[in-house]
Image (cartoon, rainbow, N blue to C red; front, side):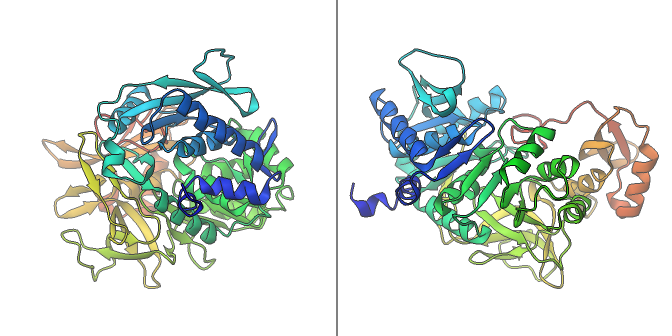
Length: 484
């Protein structure tokens, strides 16, 4: 493979970064630190390990790791072995994991273990961890590469409203997306990035972009509550890329002057509540920037204008393009509400479905996100809900996410799920399932008052039901269908 060809592959990102920054620290975690050279060396060992165990090029290789010191060499090692990398979250249920492995026709999996293992099928990783190899017999080992010759990575949609789909990204997709994300996030080689998001879901916009920039990743895997806040204070981050829950933890446990090193804080993964945004800004004198990611696209939507409400999605940021289409066709809507479609660098190459069907997507095509948004007069967008989760009562469209967002503003409500139920007397009724902190409906009057104040009559639940838990995916998203 020529140098020109190598530079067109995703693994070149770590190769180039190690060549440029060498012994600079790439990862700091709660136990140790690791340089660019360290993790590149381990990535090479992963590639040789797969090849020595007969894993054929083009095969899909799944790997499961939580921490950056293991995730990075596994990802880049699989790519260096010319295989298709499939990150599998350690927090998936057995059914979710098996669905992904069977859909992708996985040929081998690498599972990280901290237990000593002397077997030939194990490989030492940083931090006294080991990768244990499990070989599998795929039905069609060349299924992904025959449909997508330059496939590099497969990820999966959340599976909240339908069976999870395999999203294929080529080497060119990853390179283009990582470069775009790095420029939009504005991460540099001087940055120390607090990075607590699960890497199985966020590695392109986070890890790969940060490596490309030569930054240091402050990995908080396994840290929660006060331990997470203490780590953040001790490591002096300049940039944070985290979920609202992480910023809530910092507000709860970090001192007001302890994060003075932060120059930018980006909130991703789930909607940002306005009260949390205001509390964080008041406490640390820094505005939270909301970014809205789409697995097939990247990070096209940003709320980085201080004049906008913190919970708005903001606008589609160049070089991405976006428009709203109506519900019945792909023609642009002239109204203020519609489905968001986007296009830009790094869009996915296509889907692999559990049925075996392959759907391709051209890079220049508009992608229909399935997200219904409202457009304000100044062009800013706000999230209404998912098209597939939409409830129709009479001639009214109701998006349960809108209602749930309001309900979760109440401190007593941990989680909420709204659905419609047919009643023989009253017809369609809105039912709100509630996970309450005290497992009672003691706060029901306050919930009703909140709904009266914040929601029009057609969006107010007709009934509240206390439940112990609401089914969710491995990534924590509410499941709106009967089975995984």
